Amino acid sequence: MLDAAFFRRWMAATAASVDREAERLTALDSAIGDADHGANMQRGFTAVTAALEKEAPTTPGAVLTLAGRQLISTVGGASGPLYGTLLRRAGKALGDAAEVGEEQFADALRAGVDGVMALGGAAPGDKTMIDALLPAVDALGDGFAAARAAAEAGAVATVPLLARKGRASYLGERSIGHQDPGATSSALLIAGLAEAGDE
Ligand code: ADP
Ligand code: MG
Ligand code: MG
Image (cartoon, rainbow, N blue to C red):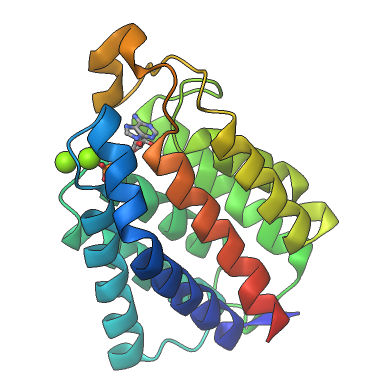
């Protein structure tokens, strides 16, 4: 079973990897965007960390809804409302249970990904965070390590794709040959699950 402490560890692991990889995320976004994805993610997850410390939510659902709210209110870029929706929807789906099963969590994360697709209008193959998140959710039944591998493979598989959503889509064919920054940060988010589960 996964308790609130697990979800706090997940957010902390993601904040740490976003800090470590911020320059890489920004470099990817400078190739096909506006060079702010690292800073956007850092600002958002710094706020998530601070809010979790201050409010100390005690259920999995409350951890994720608080984190999602912080991302929406602190990140100016497109990724803020999208990641915020992912976590808020997932948190809402978990309700107020003190502990949740891995299958219940997989269903909740799928609801979150559905929310991201509804909000942003992206489909698989559009070269967005969906290309890492959806394979991860599909693999979650096989465990966190499998989900991490699927997300990382999904992020790498965005390289040859033509961007159809977000800023990168303005580049048309010139978006081909670059890894999507949001798919890359999504792989960090999913890798955080494996890290949180290991502790
Ligand atoms: P901005 O583009 O506003 O500067 P960021 O640089 O923080 O925001 O985030 C860019 C990332 O957001 C993209 O790499 C992509 O993965 C994701 N993204 C942008 N638009 C969408 C969308 N409509 N649906 C899903 N993901 C999107
Ligand atoms: Mg950007
Ligand atoms: Mg921007």
